[in-house]
Every structure is written in C-alpha cells, then in structure tokens.
Amino acid sequence: MTSARAADVFVHIGLPKTGTTYLQGVLWKNRERLAENGVLIPGERRSLQNQAAWDLLGRRPRGAELPQVAGSWQRLVEEVRGWSGTHAVMSEEFLAFARPRQVRQAVQALAPRQVHVVVTVRDLARVIVGSWQQQLASGRAWTWEEYAAAVRDPERGPASAGVAFWLRQDVARVLATWEAAVPRERVHVVTVPPPGSPPELLLERFATAVRLDPRWLPNRPEQQNLSVGAADAEVLRRLNAALGDRLNERQYTRAVAHGVRPVLQGRRSPAPMGLPVEQLGWVSERAGVIVEELRDRGYDVVGDLDDLVPAPVGAPARPDGVEPGELAEAALAALEAAVEQFATLWWRTRAAREGHGDASAAGPQLASS
Image (cartoon, rainbow, N blue to C red; front, side):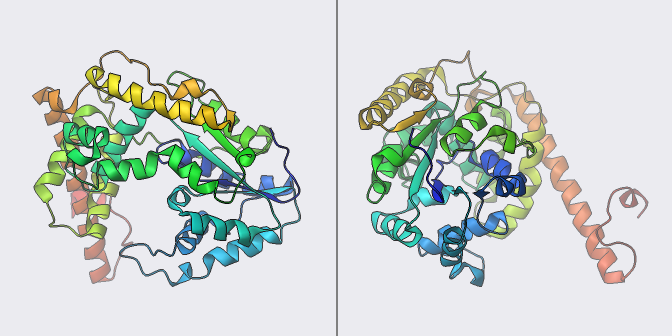
C-alpha cells in the first residue's frame, strides 16, 4: 500500500448500505483521540461534512433552510490545509454523486495535500435488500418484486428505483469519476466482510485503508440494526401505500421514519428477510462483473473481492409470502407506536398551552390525565 504523506487527505465516499454510518460514528466518537495522534476529522460536528459535500456539489437539502451550507466546503478545506498532523480523514457518502468537474475542483482545492479515495463495497444481494428497505423508510410503496425487477433492468421499472439504485451502487462508474483527478494507486477498495464474520472486521479493514491504529479507536457508537424483518417491511410498505401523498416529507419523517419504523426495527422478527433464492442467479452474475472490473483496474483492496459475491443463505423470508399472523403482529406494533406517539405529543402540547409542568414529560402522567 502507498504510505501516507504529511497531511494527506483520505476521502471516504461510501457506498450507501456498506456500514458507512457505523464507520462515521466510530470516527466521531474518537475524534479527540485521533487528533492527539495526528489525525484530523474535519468539522466541529458530523453534519458539517455533509453540508460541505452539499456545497461542493452545488445542491441544497430539500425542504430545509440551511444558509450555513454556502461556503461550508471552503471552510472544511481551510481546516484541512491548516492541519499540521499526519493526515485527515473525512467520510461522506454523498460525495459518490460527484461529477468529474466537481472531483477536480475538490482535489485542486485541497492541494498540495494528496487525496486518497476510499470506497466501502458490500455484496450485491445484501445491498439490494437493504436499499429496498431504505426506500420504504423514505415513503415508497414498491413491492419487493417491482423493486428487484427495476434493479435488474432499470427500463422495466420507475427511474427512481432501478436507475437511482445504480447511480448509488455502480462502484466502477463512481471510481472512474474520481480517477478524473486521483491516480489509481491512491484509490482504496474496502470490502464489507460476509455474514458471520467477526463484528470488528469491517472497522479493522477501514482503519487499515485510512492509516489508523485500531488502538486510537476505543470508543464505539451504539450499533443499530437498520434492517427489518419480512413482515415488518411489508407492513411499512402497505402503510406507505395507504398514506399516499397525504403527509409532507417532514411529517412523514416525524411520524413514520422516526416513530413507527424504529419500533419495527426493534422487533425480533421470526422471518428475517434476504434475497430470494430464485433471484440469486442474476444478482451473482452482476456481482461477478463488478468484481472483475475492480480486479482488472488493480486498485488497492483491503479485504477480499470474493466477499462481494453473494452466497446462498438458507431460505430467507419473502415479504409477499409472510403468514397473516406475522403481518398482524407487525401491524399491531406499528399501531402501538403511532398511538404512543400521538399521546405523547398531545400531552406535551397540553402542558405547553396550560403553562405548567414539564412539557417534555409524558410517561406515567398519561394514565392519570
């Protein structure tokens, strides 16, 4: 591997659904410890890297007034260029959407620091399932069959399904874009370990790629299981279909994404979801093409490219084949979450209007009100 020069910059660009959130959490949990060892995690808080990426790409978050986005990329650049330690590490998967012109702009702005690009890649079967569930969490109501068909052939489904998936997950295209300004020898591919691997293995691989000693990373964020079972996914999908367009984005986020979905995630589903066996063939074939593209380019690989080839995992549950009783249990959990959320908000509103008590308190007082 190429050794890190003084104040080199390692830019982790995702991909989505590859453990990015967890890795970012580790970096920020250990930001001070890393700085003591010469490594900068730029930005006073985690959201500033996200804002800087928005600014670089010339975009603004939909539905949010964030005047601080303007100029945030330049502020991050100045912080990195002023760093006197060994190197800097930033992680923002939105940078995978950068175009060649924006990549060149980023690299030129960071000069004379050398930029390394780091990408985490996961086997396609798990990514497709996880991406469908993420779409459900954003309010989509596509069935699993509709989504899988669109990923297999984007012309067969809505553009916001298949085309959007490959825009995020075509690692060969993403890295070719960054090669517009970053030489191939400074591109590092980290493979997400297969199911059943030690939980710390991904972090160890990532740390190797960005030149971090694992001893500098003693603190861990709370690991969240962002997936849901087959019954939970189907209940969420049906809820989205029933709601239609009646909620705006912020309402949906508050009521469903932050209210109902965490309850479904917290359930111990008897039917975990995975890629249906009959779809393993085309997914494995597509994954094989990705592996060969990466192998032919000769990138620095931390892990094993064979980790990206899906392996059969028993007989995973299908959301369209879940037993009615399991659907009912998941629906009851969602209803319980909705009722509790409504009751809590009602209590806070009442307390605030009457000007007494702690408006943030809800719990036991609900029963006696």
